[in-house]
Image (cartoon, rainbow, N blue to C red; front, side):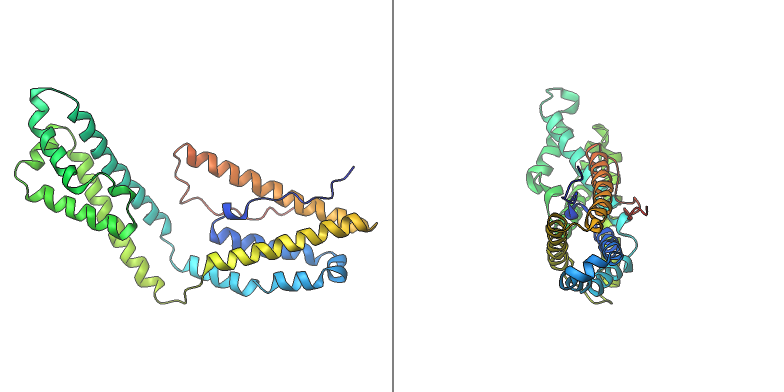
Length: 256
């Protein structure tokens, strides 16, 4: 027996660009079926009313094409500053004369600058790392301490990644400042409500009507939903495995 429920997927698992691709695809599917125009025209028109806003979101997202590099720089600086903090905690527990002086300097450094740097907001984190770097480079013996603990490469990598992030952040703000900003979160929320209203209407008419078009439509929308569920789940797994998904191509609708 055919199901009368459309297989859903979580729209909030999609990046903005992906969202702007799948909703027009859903509209294209709906427009192929005369029963939609006959019974759910108002809901279809409401959904189509979001298409200009989705175009604006897409333009905003694609205007600056280095988001992946910015994310990479952010992850890198977080990783290196956390490496220094973990090392500080480790050496603080080691009672060895050859490490004691250097370890003490590192502990004093993070007692001053705190150990939640990587958890701070983007701009604040950038400045806190700059302050940390300034302190390291003006404090006698600090570079020697990092060298003695084999942490100078991690420190230099953190310094480089922070500078790279700052450069890209400033570039992003300058370029995005030239275009109209849209509230993509609000638009997406309202658009998803319109999609859900349409799906509920389809399911209602499929249960009330003997027209087989409804079941065929549900089957097509369910195939799309199943495809997106699989793609989103796979990407979530890659993230949990610490893979870099920031530069992956967007999930695009599967064409049957």
